[in-house]
Amino acid sequence: MDGVILDSERAYLDSYIYAAGIHGLPEKDMMEAAIKCTGVTEERERMLMEETFGYIDGFSFDEIFLTSRQYFSKAMESGNIGLKPGVRDLMIYLKDKGISSG
Image (tube, rainbow, N blue to C red; front, side):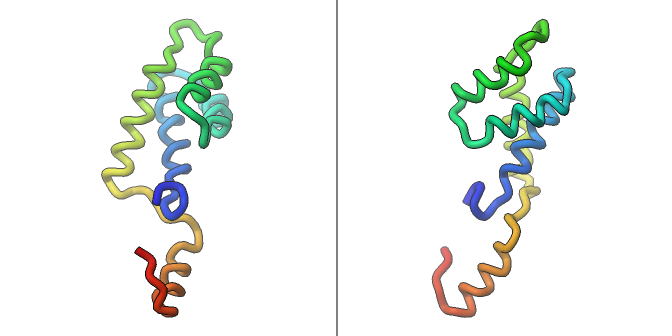
C-alpha cells in the first residue's frame, strides 16, 4: 500500500530533486515546494510549483512533472522503495497473532 506500508513519499521527494537537477532548478526550493505538494491534487501541485518557479524563464511544470514521474515509476518498478518504519514488526506481530494481513 503506497504511503501506508511503502515509503513512497521519500521516492516522491527524490523524484522532484532529480527533476530539479535535470532542469536546472534550485534543489532547496524544489524540496520545499515538493513537501508542500505532498498529498495534493495535480492541479494544486501545478499551482504550487508555478508559484515557486514561475519567475524562472522557460519553467515548464509539464516537463518537471514528466521527469519526476518517470523517475518515480522507475523507482517503483525497481523495488527500491523502502518500507515505512515499523512495518516489518507489525507484520510479524499480526502473523504471530494469526491475524490476516493480506
